Image 1: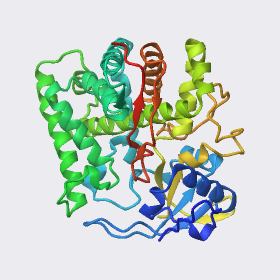
Image 2: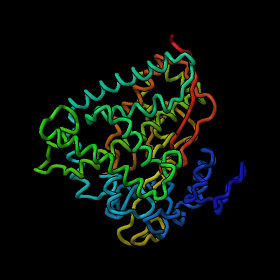
Image 3: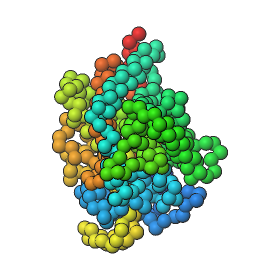
Length: 428
């Protein structure tokens, strides 16, 4: 059981990253714990969380919290493998790895094949259309908020959540009547078991997660069949009808990529937007700096938002063979969790890392993962989304600020905000 010693300094034996209670602590307390691990136990070992129904408890894992260590492990995929699962501490059934992660849970050469096909589909013409969609969707969403007579809304519900999902749905060509179910299934997959997003009578979380993945896969299978016969100008058409060196995505590979897109592309951007609004409220001087020079500050601002928020908190790797690294003897089969949020506050790399500095440069954060084949494929799109969102907020709602305390998602994997009220001066 994780101790919750209030404001008292952490002791190493009080920290348990496998205990859900730890992830329910205030953000500042978790940051302090990671700071202690970085300095005193950079390869700290933890028992695995309580296994879900249908899984077995594993041997435990090492928490990697230093920036340089995560860079090295990300680069050397021949030693630190993703193929046994990158998004779960527990070893999951193969069908879950296929549903939840696609390329994330693969090693080369299969990973490289799928990434090449997907990358080829993102043509300049398609990206230009997506960027136009971003501006249109943001303007519409912010505009509906701006005329809210009460001058207060839950910004997660009204902007952070629907915006990135809408972009993905439009990009893939998903019918509008499927948007709500896609959001619901996405929330289940990334809930971390948070009861708010699970059915009230859920006795088998594995079954619920699989059902959510199967629902999303079914939507994509149906659409893919249509686009093979009648292609349009959406990403689904490009993926099902495109190939690289004669290779095409199978239906299952396409469905897995879609799930990756609606999960990773949606929730990470949603989390970054919410955290940025909160950080700007707490740092009005930074907000003024950005508003006074929107074009000049946006490039460094979006990087700092991703560093500061670290939406995805960790990814797992599994050792393919014995190796000694920095004096520690890792064994074949050992699991390591690379904690990006901890690395993004490493004082060996970042000056005053707990300070939200929109002009921070250089900013070699790991918010999109470490270098190597698994670096986030959608990083450029995510940064474009963040930039346009805040340009529009500054234009339509310049005095928007958080009201009260946000309600955080209790999850070790996503540093999410479930609810956050904001206040502003309505425009009408």
